[in-house]
Amino acid sequence: MPLTPSRIIIVMGVSSSGKSTVGQSIARRLHVPFLDGDGYHPEANVEKMRAGIPLDDADRWPWLERLAAALHDAADRKGAAVGACSALKRAYRTFLTEKAGEPITFVYLDGSREVIGERMARRNHEYMPTSLLDSQFATLEIPDPETENVLVVPVTDSVDQITRTVIKSLDHLKTFKRWQ
Image (cartoon, rainbow, N blue to C red; front, side, top):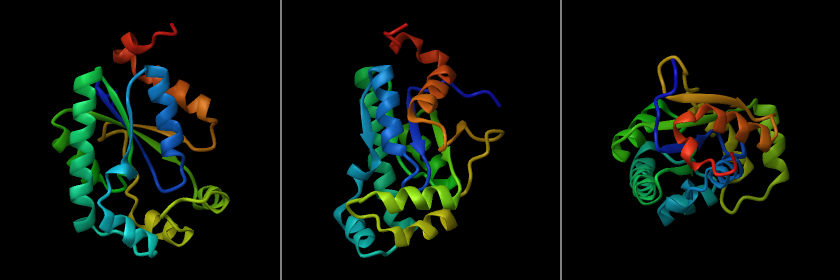
């Protein structure tokens, strides 16, 4: 199904898939705000993850609601906004869209457990230990481009290639492409 035009783009996937890096790159190219979902977690969530305890749905709903509202507000102020959020379950993606009150385009960074595991081993995240990667993959419901507003891109592409692929798919945001 073709992408539904939206002012909000969320780069999604498991931890260490590159959500923040790719999201920042897309936001820079569009000249719009970037909001990292990690910054919207309540402190209790951060402490759980730091302790190696996976979040459950009760932990995630308030976080997702805060992020959706912030993305909507940023899009109102600047015309569009890009966020990074794991959005691992379809219910989370639906909830984000409902709470934002408008369509969201999800960019799913698709990568194998091996590739993501290697990336995670090379980075030092403030509160996401490598031990939680398996719970991320167990929770992940891979988005379906036939039934969801999602663009699937391989994590093995370069950040620049992923950014170009995404930007090319967002024809409705051409007004933000000041470099063209």
